Each structure stands twice: as structure tokens, then as C-alpha cells.
Amino acid sequence: MIVIGVDGSRAGLRAVNWAMREADMRGAGVRIVNAVPTWAYKAPEDAPYAYAGRLVRESATSVLADALRRAHSQMPRIEVETELLWGDPRLSLIRASKDAELLVVGSHGLDGFRGLLLGSVALGVSGQATCPVVVVREGRAQPRNEVVVGVDGSPGCAAAIEFAFAEADLRGAELHAVHAWGEPVAGFRSEVMPAAIDKAGARRLLLAEVVTGQRERYPDVKLVERIERGHPVDVLRRASTRAGLLVVGSRGRGGVAGMLLGSVSHSLLHHAVCPIVVIPVAGGA
Image (cartoon, rainbow, N blue to C red; front, side, top):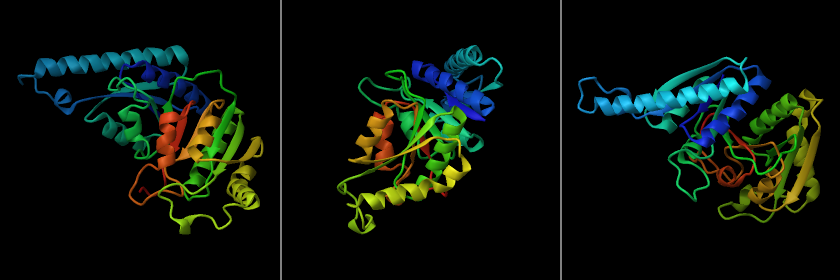
């Protein structure tokens, strides 16, 4: 099941378009959801604010109906259901993710402010949902049939690589496994840096090792291994300008215990050009 969060914004409808194509490739069902405040969802009919609550619910129902029409126009044969949720939209979507294989949202919602690069809902659910979260952006150009995955050798990286291989296989796409390296960034402890940070051979070995298992599992996927010097955010953002999808783990080697979203994935959510998938770390924070 693919869950799509909508709120009546154009970004939400772009998320519907993307998710319906994904559902078609996966043979998955789709649930489109929208959330209203708790007071509006549970307003008693005799409450002073009952009329306002009814208007909020009717508006949300209309948003769901519009999204459903869009979904049916995209892929009429895909089974689609809608659901009205209650409470904070971020928490509602996180709860909904427990039964989903993918959670798809737009990069901006109606609560966004001009100048912000990412909506609060998209940022709030990434790294906290129990399934992969896809944040759909408005593409700047016709992308290549190419999936990019960021590789850093961290424990969370394995899940991102596994997802990226499976996605590339679904799409018949070329998979680019990208490892970026450079000078230690602020906040990195020197003792966790690889001993051979300045040796390209060690980098190639790391990259080869982490993709080996999935390469054997998906022999038909054309894999391109790329090692580039530079900050991971800069390297992966450049890669996203021509890709159809960017896949990253929610936390990498620089992750701090207790943080649900690492600095690299956080920055890429703001700056990646193509749709980006954030893969949760198994076991939580």
C-alpha cells in the first residue's frame, strides 16, 4: 500500500501523479489521506463551533475527492481509497506509515511560506515515518531514467542501497551509487573517520563491498559506481539534477544518537532537484 498525503496544494497533486505511476510499477494499492484538526474531526453537533468544524471536514473531503479524481485520471485500473485523518498532519502521516510500503508527500503544502524550500509536513515526517518517505518536487527538466543512491558505508546505508536497487529494477533504470569524500565536516569526530580517507583505492573498495550483495540479487540492473570528492550534499545535489530519483538514508556516518534525520539527508530534502526518498534506519533513533 502506498499512502499519499494531500492538502489541496499543487505540490500534493504532483505527489499523487508520482505515486500513481509508482503504484502501477509495484502493483500496489493506494490510500490518499488528508488530516483535519482534532477539534474539527470530533466536534459534537451541539458544540458552539460545530458549524466551523463541519466546514473544515467538508473542505478536507473535497480535497480528497479532487485527489481521487486526479488519481483515477492517471491510472484508472489502480485501486484507490481515501481516508480523513485527525490531529497534527505530521503525526497523522507518521501513524499512517505503519501500514504502508511508501509514504509520498509534496515538497510544499498550503502551510508553506514563500521562500521556504521545504514544507513543515514533508520535513516532519522524513526520518520519523516507519516506511520510506518520498518527497516529490517539481522537476526542472526531463530527467534521465536514472536512480541515484548516496553511499557512505554507514549501517543505515544498506537499506538505502537495497531500496535503490529494487527501484532501479522496477524502472529498468541505470543505478548510480555515489560516494562523496572530502575534508571532515564540522561535527565529525576524527576517530570515526575512515583511516584511509585520502586513499581512492580504499574508497573504491568500500563502494564495491556495500553494493556486492544487491548486485548479485539484481543482475539486470546496470550499476555505475561513482566516487567524487566534495561535500556529500553538493555531490548528491548535482547528481539529482539529471536523475529521476535520489535515495538516501535518514542518518549516515555523521549521525548523532537521538537525531532522527542526519544533516546530509536534511539538506538534500531542501535542495535536491528530483524526487528524494529517505529510508528510515532500522530500529529507530
